[in-house]
Length: 561
Image (tube, rainbow, N blue to C red):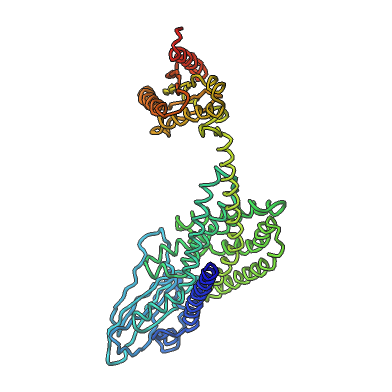
């Protein structure tokens, strides 16, 4: 029967493992098929159908014109004709650094909202436009009136789709969802690291590299998330996320520079310090210039791009600084390809940004950041777990060192470590109750009944103190300071009332304990109580309580003073 039981258990384990593997395989295959199946939505790409007022084909990457005489940006109109027979038809497009008003057969149907405050600058950033179109039996002419925001940078329109509303929205989200989720995941990781740093840095030995890695991860992910354009798509307020994107990008060199300063040594440490200083000054100056309207972030991005290029050369020694401490040289097989991908991606993103191909430049940086941060985060979390585990072990050892092994109360070493705290309370003239306890007849019990009974008596006193003061664990501490001597400190303005109530509970405990049959001894606890109100020191109060305790001891024994 036993053999059959184990055979059934083994068979069950095999089938459940096979079932889980099947579910995992089918799920992964389904996701893969959906990812590889690109054209699943019935929408048309409407980017290539536009002409200018003269009827010439016009690219959507070169919109807007600047009048040097008036110093103003001039609107530019482009046209396209579409067949719109479906009742549910929407035109969706992403406009960058420009305002777009939409006309249908010369009738204004959508006027772009202009910025009304200097705080966000001149441009609304990358703004989604979603315009519902009425069905028509005849072709309709759409006109986009585009006004660029900058004289040195044309407006740009991409991600233009025409079709069913639901399909257009799904297509936009599907193409950007992975990057959005990765960015959100990294941003949460950054927040977790910052919380861990502020929680652990005082209690455990945690360096500031965790702080700066968390900061770098957070700002990198925030910039990457804004650049997916899904926040703007879901929430709106494109100018807000435009500003957050700029600010986050400015903070990235500073965060990584400080991380490198914490991690590297020698000349690289000195260079990282200088790099961090320059990045900090740049961040402050560029922010002030933007807020005062002198130079907007858009026009000063060249400074940040230069800092990012320099940062590339810090990333390799920065990652290797973690791996060297791991002393796992086999990891170089993984690290070097990741660093190579990182550098290529950053270089490609800068090139694409400069030539005006905005469509996927941020994807390169997102991949680069993911490669880089994975190298650092994996190691950092291993370090956190090790530190936390060591810290927990140290706490356990510290608790053991301060705890009396027999009774579970604090020991003499614990009282010595708490003395400074009590002296501070006394010096501040706050009330502090001191109670000295002693067990009567312990020596007699040891000599006549044996040390086992004596130990039982000592443990009974400790249990009695725990029972008596259990309602005041936050303000009362009890110590075993000697063989049969105990000390209790009451830190409360109501020390007198607590003393009277708890002593009554202690006598109640003694009566209950002594009612046990065949005990062989009677538990009698002598005590002396002194309340400090600033008129004496802790040491003097303990001595006075000791005298009162011995007087009480003699009374309990029936011996007069």
